[in-house]
Length: 483
Length: 95
Image 1: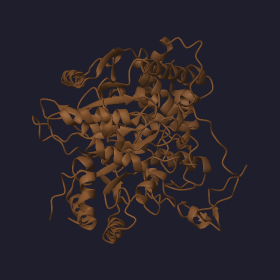
Image 2: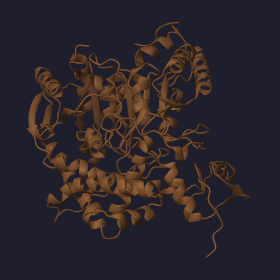
Image 3: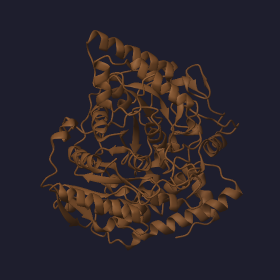
Image 4: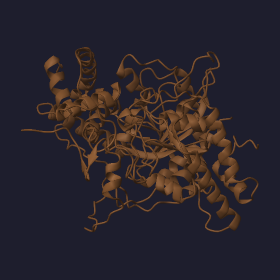
């Protein structure tokens, strides 16, 4: 069997079109690898469908007709996207047996572009987590190991942990993710990949199981920046079924390849030198700054004064929205039900048994901050601070074109760590949450490795709907990192 | 602001999540920690700031008021834990 491990999407597509191998061979290669993998990346496999989709792609290629953008490319689908006729769980017991009768717009776009769906990837329950340890279907393991302690399993990050781990382990070519506060960028960073969260409104939220609707945004996790552009092209669309779907024209994302970083202004926010920022990461950040300088970019110091308030703001807004969104899981219309003779008991017991600890914690917080007497002090206050955080970015972008920061304060950590205190886990997202609150596009690209050979990701944040600039900046990092 | 037994009981009732005594004491501690941490926001002067409800700033358009159906009652009910004669079934409610 040919080794398909090190191919990117565009090379693979060329090979498919030249008939050097077929999509069926490629698909079977990944199926075989998924079957042998013990990283727990997938909740549900869709191998039979995948084989049919691959055959269909091969047919189109052999006829040389109607060949689509992602023709025959095997990918993983985060189990947050509803897939018609295929179980969709969001990593929760409460949706253990839920089979949607409709397709999410994002997965539909990918299928219409010829992608072959291998299965539904594991994730933190309802996307609430940063280590993929809250899934009802068990934690996901990062295929990467520390060179010092190679017996310890590391977390892949979260919430799109199954997607990131499966791409890093070559179980698929690319995968979809969703990002509410860092759930694409942080796992991409932990697994040595590229993760792109587009501007809010670029990808439709229709059929994407809701966590915090004002923040949720779909995006790709890939091996290369170019692959991220190809996946994003397919995933993006205006959608009548999503009231916050953007009507702005969608550019040709591959145009980033012709975008020159020379003369562009790279903003460095002093406030991102947060307490506890790992020294190896600081070094890679400095190296990356120099790289941009060498390539003719101008480095500008900027200030985002409300950065330290972003995480507390997020941990009011996201749980508040979640408490409303997750009210639908009542044991009546779909999903798990705990039977009882009394209706109130049935609701309370269904939700008590159907949700895991982290989800319950956030639903309690969300309910509390929205309850009479606390709404103004917490929820309304957080909405006001969110405005200030967004204004910070607006004024910063008057002075620069993109903002360069690390993605995470630390590298991937062993499974079981940071489990005692929820806040310790929340701090993983301290550098990704601000861009989410402001709805800005942001990419994480591996820029270096620490002494234990673990990847370090850099984050590039762009102006609204300027995905091209962050792809171009990401490409520069990728080109010069030396591995 | 601190959360006590009474508040946790009330919130769990509102959130419709049954909790036992053991969970209750654990939640009191965790929620107090988290709320203590978010209390940091009190330091921010927001007197003249309007709340930000969404980052989406395009005008929302009405879609045509047309009936379209991509599904059937049968499919909708297929995921229900219990259904009968085209309805969802819940425990008997007597007021």
